[in-house]
Image (tube, rainbow, N blue to C red; front, side):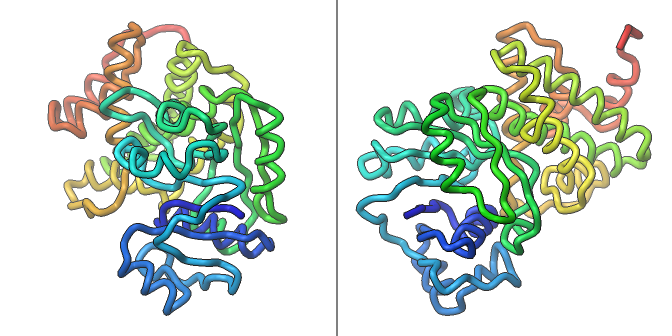
Length: 318
């Protein structure tokens, strides 16, 4: 049985896709009213409207006694706080993080938090270019599953793959984790570029230099370059910087145009930019785009001054 923790859009989309493929799936949500509504309507109208639940998808607010794997689909900044109450039940079960980011309080990624909170559990991360609605509707999607133990990774790969959800695996957990986290920061910057009216040429330049920054940061922290050139790095970067569905892109565009952005919508790149800026200082990394996003989202600089700072950087070889 697959337990999906978190009935947001992505958790719901994964649960639907896995259940449609014939898996035994339970989707857990902590809010009793939300659970009751989903049980009655067989939809998640608030987070993933328009996609009906398969008959074999069980919606619950109670943890089952056991599971083959647990997919944790909660916001990154909520993970550390949620783990203590779940650890007694989850410890020993394979855990797969399905969130993208760096914990602002500790500077750690999702797998490090899971390993600390549930030391008996094998841990992995599922990441890559994907939107919940595409997964739920059975549109072809490819993701990366990163697990340090390749034997466990192979088992999880078979369990999570479906006819329309293709899972590639790697043992480079650091690369997959940082690629998925840092692309959100670059996506905010891409939204700022478009919102400020700087054009698609500027966005292409931003994405290219952003990828170089992402790869430089991740490899400095132990990632493999080839991982960052794959789905969890370049693939996810392209999707989130170019699609109107990307929440991080939407946030950046709203920031540049002065529009109000719904605070209930999770934008992982905001906290990740701040966390990565701290890591950059600690590791003497030059990450100008990350620094710009962190400063803009915390109100330390204006949009015009941030753009001017980036454009006036010293000329150099690519």
